[in-house]
Amino acid sequence: MVAKPADDGLLVHIRFLDLDANEYHLNFYYTGKSGGIIWMKHQQGVYWFHSNPEPSYAPDFK
Image (cartoon, rainbow, N blue to C red; front, side, top):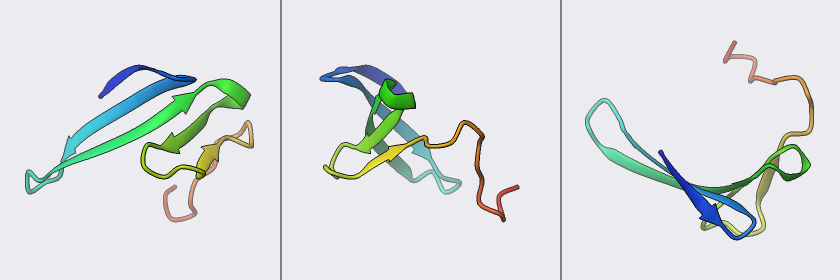
């Protein structure tokens, strides 16, 4: 993972491999404003933000 300053927050780049050694890259922006907001580098207008102080999980994830 590499994070570097960008505009109003950080540009985060994650590189990972699956079990078959296929390489994947994920790029997103993050700002700590309003409790933290994430938006994908190539999907303008779509934002994820934390709206509850308690963690939440998909029912099958626990």
